[in-house]
Image 1: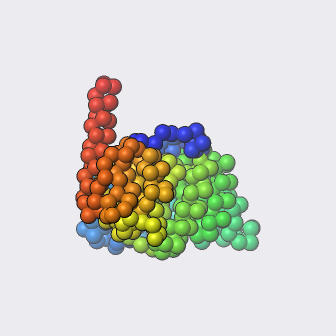
Image 2: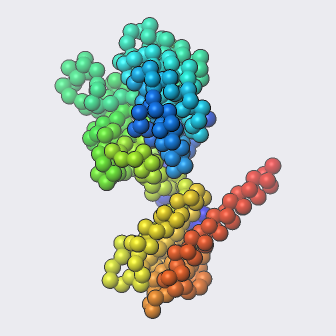
Image 3: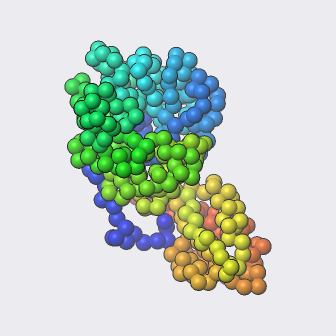
Length: 377
């Protein structure tokens, strides 16, 4: 946030990892943690898939994954890749030819499980295609689809089994002298996933893709993901993430950014700090925040806005935000700019005026960035 200073006790020491590229997006090696999502359209319907990708990209998605289960999907992938403003990951299971076709179609990354692609010769073909077409690979281990021999060895999905599976798959790629890969060890159980990721982070320097798989609907899945991913990110683990929700993929992107923003790991758009409201509120806080969230969706510049219903906490919160409004009495409240009390305003004028102030501040921040860039040259 432009107004808030960075404080030492808020720092997160991120795990050291190798850097790879997913298209033009760096992953690992200290690069910003990227936010991914996955389309839920029928991939062979290129038009619908592209439209969904565009909405996700507008919401901030850095990378989008699409499932490639059949020839129709891989045939459509070339157009999808061409029209997408962000790198596309092709999700492959079992059918190694879909991986070859996806690489040829321009996918930036292949999400595979080397163990279910088939024979060693088929794995070699996939790795060769990835190398020839500049694709990276994501090794995707999932508690729900562990290899039979590991389930027999451990008796059930457990962190040790998932880590062993991941390291086995890493070895397969390394045996082919392929190192442009990241890895995930997902589970729907928060404890299982967190333990597996912690063990994996100690065992490899590969970039790690975080996710709590099949987390659930918008509310329950958001909570599970915030707990699981939030704790791992707090420990410094994770180079890219996807929040898996039974919801519009755009919501996955929004939740992913909110998790990162809460930890100070990524800043995008307006961070609205608002109270839950009570009988002391000087205006309808809930409706105001709902309106402002919609009106300010277009602002991509990182900044903070406090909307507090009364003077108990309002002035204190406003001191730490770029723009603030605190409810007062007689249908009026106080506007704060850069943490300082500025002017009073009627509740009726508040929403339009706050939007105007946020847009003005965003323009000033962006102009400053341009000026800094010019000066640096």
